[in-house]
Length: 147
Image 1 (cartoon, rainbow, N blue to C red):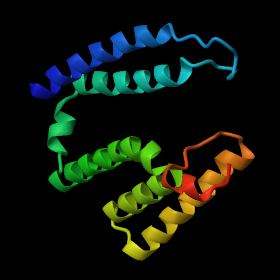
Image 2: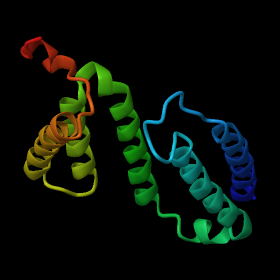
Image 3: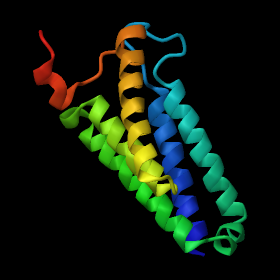
Image 4: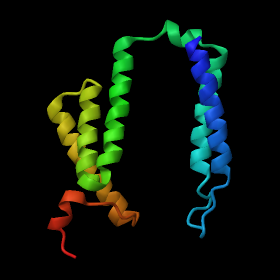
């Protein structure tokens, strides 16, 4: 019963947000599809998922596995921490930390997760900042870079 109630409320929330996102307009054309495509796609996926849970809620309650639910919750918390630490710590450090945390969370060994987290932060920063010309915050490393 609670799953159906939650999914019905979530479906209404997605519909309301889709109405808001439909009006997104950019003052200049920086992207061929415009600013509304990404939010509308995400809202359509969330709406489809909540509609599925509204019609067939028993599938979720039959397959609920507590360690998996805990792992998913920790994953969401790690991504929330990433969003909050993105500007203060900078892209490289926050990406390295979340890469390490998610790697360990999904049963990776600590040393390879640390190495891949650091490499991911550095290589993605180089890709976005130098090749794609997307400025990213340096955070704590700002003091080491000449202006």
